[in-house]
Image 1: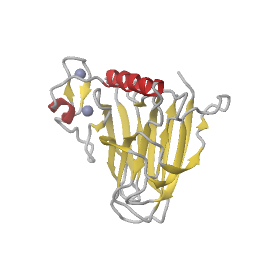
Image 2: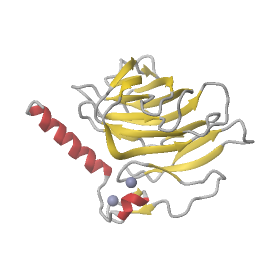
Image 3: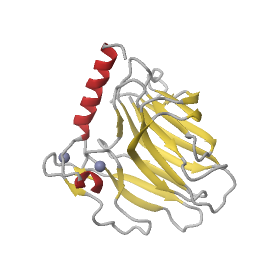
Length: 149
Length: 90
Ligand SMILES: [Zn+2]
Ligand SMILES: [Zn+2]
């Protein structure tokens, strides 16, 4: 078992720009596995439909860096990198949407992988998974992901 | 990969009396997360197909390709290509 990390990604939701992503560095990357995902909005409770999508990407895009937090404080810093509030989108891989969640703005979605059922990112430069809100704008949203590397 | 044990998803909506819960399976070919229950908690039928070649459970779009491409194998191929590209400096 590798070290486990938490990443919190936030932005004012955008139809065209990602909430955030977790990607490999350009060198010395390693496989990482997403095993927990939580999606929700922290704005005022309102009855609005929204769609969330997790999609594979091959570049980091332009983003505000987020440092993955070790779940065990004794662990060293993550090799895998993360960021939020994209201003330039990552390069998404067509058709490789791993999770699609239609979710009312007032609701929260959580997913926990079964052991062996984690979302695995190959150990190649800048590969990762991004989180998008393709139908909802203007609401402050947060995605939290736990991964292992 | 293509785990037989199930993941778990839930939606907590303050407008509903209780959380909406679903077991999930991660497709053994493409890793798409398949929800096995609908929002009322009823099992969804026909959302998973057993692959007789690799023994994993897959999503319907993967099953419709009629090819067995285990995700573990794809990972190895992607990483081999990445090493090659790095070696030739791309
Ligand atoms: Zn599939
Ligand atoms: Zn198969």
